[in-house]
Amino acid sequence: MIYFDNASTTIPNEEVLDTFTEVTKKFIGNPNSMHQLGYQAKKLIDEATKQVADLLSVKQEEVIFTSSASEANNMAVQGILKAYPFRNKKIVTTPLEHASLQVLFNDLEKNGVEIHYLKLQENGQIDLEDLQKELESEPLLVSIQHVNSEVGIIQNVEEIGKIIQNYPKTFFHVDATQSIGKLPISLENIDLLTCSAHKFFGLKGIACLVKKAQIQLVPLIFGGKSQSIYRAGTPSPALIASFSKALRLAKESETLSFKHVSKLKEKLEQGLQEIDGIIINSYQAGSPYIVNFSIPTVKSETLLHALSEREVYVSTKTACSKGNQSEVLKALMKDDIVASHSIRVSFSKDNTLEEVEQFLKILKEELAVLNFKKGAN
Image: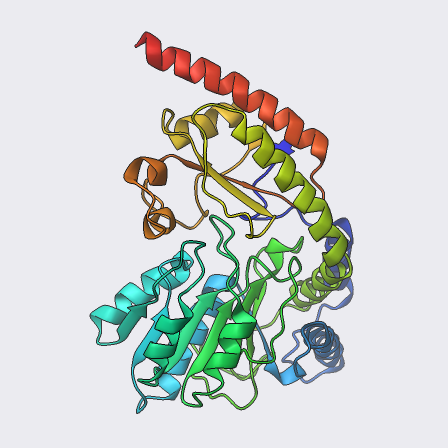
C-alpha cells in the first residue's frame, strides 16, 4: 500500500493509540463528577491541557478542545460575531479557505455579514496592500488559513498578525490544521487558532481552538461545566490525553520531518515534470507536505479509482469539499479543465523515496491505459 492522502487524515501513531487505550481503561470517571474517580479524570485532563498549552506557548485556559477543526473554525467565527454585536460586522478572508469556513462565510453573507475576499498575488499569497486597505474599516475578524489544504500555499501569518496588531478592534483567526506539527508557527500575534489531532498522527474526534484570554467568545454548545467554559459536554480524558501525546511527538520530530518530506516533494515533482501532459499546480515555496497536479486528458475520479485498485491512495481535493471543480484552483486563476482534473498527493514523515518512485511508475502505467482507452473510444 502507498498512502499519499495524509492531508485528509494521518495514520495514528502507536504510542498515541496506547495512550488512548490506557486512559480509557484506567480513568473511567466522568471528569465533571464530584467523586474521586471524577477528580482523577479531571486532573488528567488538566495535565494534558497544560502540556498542549506549553507546546503551543499559550496559557492553559486558552486551550479549548472540540470534536473537529470544523467545529473549532465555526466556534471561532460565530463566537466572535456574537460576542461583539456592536462592532463592524465585516470579515476579511481569502478564497482559499477550508470548506468549513467557505460554507459558513456564504451563509453569514446571506444574513448581513460583509465578507471581503483578499486579492492574491501570483504565488498565491495574499496582497498585503489589499489587507492594509481593508483594515482601515476596522473589520471584526480576519480569518486566514496558514497552509492551504489543496495546493499547500503558505501564508505569512506572522507578518499578517503584526499588521493586524495595529488595529485593536480587529481579531485574527488562523486555521492551522495543515501546519501544526509540520511547520513552525508563532501564536504571538494570533488571537484564535484551529488545529486537529488526526492531521498529526492523532485520533479523529479531537481538535482544539486556541483563544487568547482577553478575547470574549460566545459558545456554540451550551450546558454545564466541562473542560472549558466555552464548550459544554462531557470531555473525553482519553481523547484529550491522546491529543497531547500526538502533539508532543509531532513537535519533537517537526524539523527532521520537514527536511525528509521536502526531499519527497522534490523527487515527486521532478518525476511529474517528465510525464507529458501533467500540470503542477503547487508552488515551489509551498508546504512540502502537499503536491497538487492536473492531468487534463483524464478525469480526476477516474484516475483516483484506477490508482486505488493498485492500492495507491491519493485525493482529488480536500476530503470535505463538494462538487467536481476545485474552488481553490479557480481562485488561483486556473482554467476549468485544470480545476476539475486535479490530484492531490499529501505526504507524512513515514512516506519514503521508494514509495515516490513506485507511485510514479504506477501513475505512468495507469495513464497509458486510460489514455489508450480514451483514444480507442
